[in-house]
Length: 186
Image (cartoon, rainbow, N blue to C red; front, top):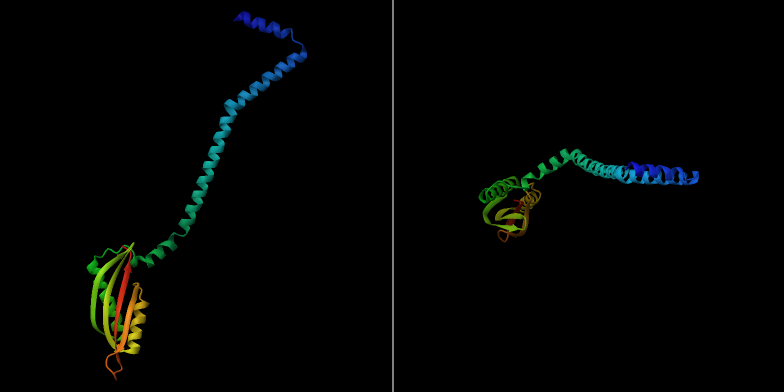
């Protein structure tokens, strides 16, 4: 090994200044290339990956902070519609509540309820519809008020069909038959 190094020194000593300069430049270029490939390149790549990860995390944080800023509004909105969602009542309890609601609206409108018949609940996709057939009597303005109050109820009541006719030939009292439904999302 010592002989090889001495032969290397002697061969370097015989080189001209220009050859020595080219050799030193070549060794420096090889050294810089190895330094770049083995140390600087992996560090730069790791920095780029970390910067991308930081940007993704910042975007996620901005989105989440936007949602958190609207949290109170979202909770208030969901509280408004809570009575239509995830009802914990059984089918009988829902029908009873619907019948009570119709009865309260009829009393408010001064309409006499002749008959109320609940029908079996119908499942329509993600919703459940409870249906009641109602027969009532009253003055025409009272019946119209009754229909309006049902349609504008906060319980999502809808009159699906109705029929109004006079009770007798010369009477001012009208008889109305209607199908009222309530929709909930179980």
